[in-house]
Length: 145
Image (cartoon, rainbow, N blue to C red; front, side, top):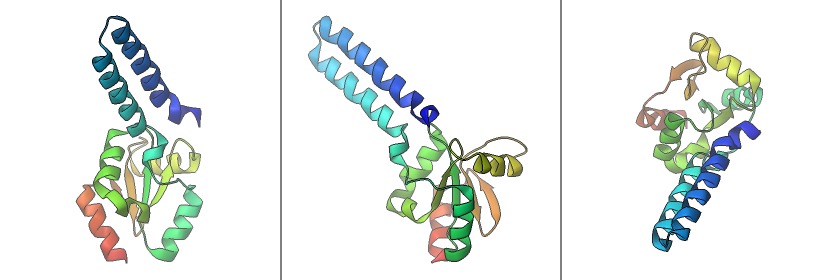
């Protein structure tokens, strides 16, 4: 759990230190802008950006019932963030598995990516797809409903 928060916490602490330095040297506007930028980066890299994660077994069970794809992801992954942001509201229709919280999810990703934990890895109708185009993923959602 703590591993997912390491980068956001470091970003907040670094941003606070840099903003404090700017404030001391007399740049309140710059300090505010820097602090806001670091807070935004921390939020983007935090688990808050993604829908709640479930474990692999539950994701597979639900996917078998509703046919929705499973997304294996991890916090801090820029490709996962790109996918999540470009999917917008439709991201909630996917089953998200955080591989840092679920060892079975990490093992499933390694099994289909030559031993690497390459994310996002998406399982659609039992077929793995590593880092697919977000538009393709959105198309899979419309075809599964």
